[in-house]
Structure formats: structure tokens, C-alpha cells
Image (tube, rainbow, N blue to C red; front, side, top):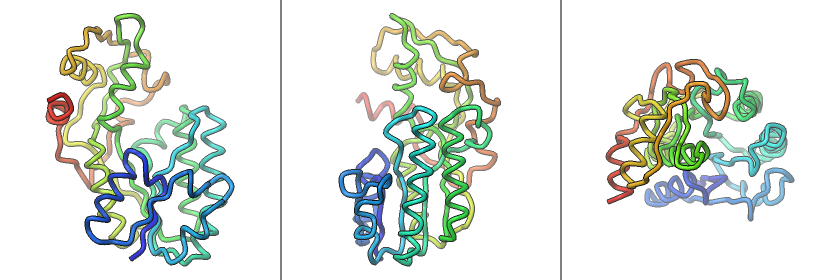
Length: 248
């Protein structure tokens, strides 16, 4: 079975490709260099003979208008090409709670992507994932002023990239759900707690200051916006164990 992984060289994509290749599937790892979803360049060739497409692409810019344009234009080019190629299952990675945070531009763009998938006519599964462990450091860095890291205490249920990749690879081999699957980590934690734990593990002298007004990416979100109502798939790796592996 031929599986095309769009965004196949990224954080999640490279892991999905490795897992599927280890299972002896015919996997094409497509990157922006070989397939341009904004123009359609390389799409027809990449999709030829494909039964499954896994879309793990992301906008190069997170500015509100740019990210919305990326997902809408990508859908405009991608789904007719998938239909012409006879693709039987479209798997896309989205975000738990995206539809509960439409005050944030990026989340509005992900909701638009989900709507395009549902309207495409291609059998699909949308994998809604929680935040990655790998992004906690970036959130801390973004909130750094001098020697202080200012972040909110927003509730999360983060997950390791390896667990996300494993779930996506498994789902790609299953029948389309024509719906959503939530994928989350094994424990609920507050962002400020995670940031403190990360800095301590790395012997980073910065101090974390909790500022609830910061919300998530600068916008206020509902208390349970970032955690799943139900977790059909739960990762097994806890944050502390992941940290130990990263810093050991």
C-alpha cells in the first residue's frame, strides 16, 4: 500500500515515515521541496498510486491571514488531486479544542482546514492532538523577559511527539472514521508547572512567573479548551520521563 506523508520530513512526519517504513509499507515522504501545496507543484506525481494521504503540513507563517490562506489554498489544490488519484483515506493532524478557541487566528485556520476536509468527498480521519512536549520550551522562551519566564497556568494534557506519530501511523492503516479521534498525553498539567519542571531539568536559572492573563498564545481560552472531552488514544510517556530522556 502506498502512503504519502505530506510534511514527511518534519517533527511528526519524519517519525510517522520511519514507523510505516519499518512495517514495510511503500511510503513517500513529501516535503515543501518536492510538493508545493500552495501551487500544486508535484502533487499529481506524488499521489500517483497512493491509497492513503497523511497531511502533517503547516503554514510557514503563523500570522492570522497567512495561516488561513495556507490551509484554504492547500485544500483547494490537494483534494481535487487526491480525488483524481483515487485516494481512499485522508488523515490530517489537527488540534484538540481548536473549535473552542476561535478567538485565536491559528485555531480559526485549523477549523477551516477541518471543514474543507469534511467537504472534500474523500474518506477521512481527523486526528486532534494536544500540545507536544517538544513545544513547552518554545512557549517558555516566548514568554522570557530577562531572567523571568512569564507564562499562564492554562490546563494542558501534553503528549510526546513519538506517541503522536505512533497514533497517526496506526490510524493511517485503519478504515476512515469520517470523524475525529482525540490523541492526548497520560496526565493533565498546568503550563507554568511544566515550564518550571523543564527549566529545573535543564539547570536553567530562569524563574517562572505565573500570569493567568496571558492565556494561550496571548489569548484567553476556556479552562478545558486544551484537554480532550474524551481520549480515544492516550500516549504512555509522561513528561518527567520524557525530560529524563532528553537531559540524561
